[in-house]
Image (cartoon, rainbow, N blue to C red):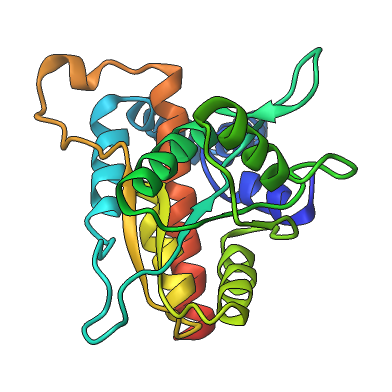
Length: 246
């Protein structure tokens, strides 16, 4: 795993809260009174982040940050950029993962509606592995009957997606595009393109509903903890962009 991925795992729940619990155990072993409070707070944080209410609230707040419209005065989109997500690897050959497949389906639908050419962007997910963008192009051709015009296969993160995609499209005389990603990821993606002066129109995949607070919204489940982690990672990325670029 790249250093950036290790650092992200260490600084975000659930691992961060687990480390707090371990620290509380060490403090308790040394007879510190604060140990119980620290352990209880960390455990409560884990349980809360595993609820549909926390995951839905964090995700819905992210989605509200996305503009979903081009800046005023921007040229109309002349291409469609589909951002890679994750790769599924098992006993067989690597394939696009479920999140990536959802984005490809949305990109194919937008292509059929607008007739605009497609660009897919994602580099290798793991060292020595195939670029995800190449698997995306193959999936669009085989699963959706859609040919990709451009394959950007070097991007390591969302910022690279923006820099390398904008560079490719500008070389073709294209100055604006749709960007297809999950609704919770669009705010960070749009920010990355905006810093390059390349206007994009967000095309969201699978928008989140705001939790209503009913009893079932407070029942913890592991899949909701994963959703909370994705949302917290996006918020951390937005914060990094703000601190680094202003």
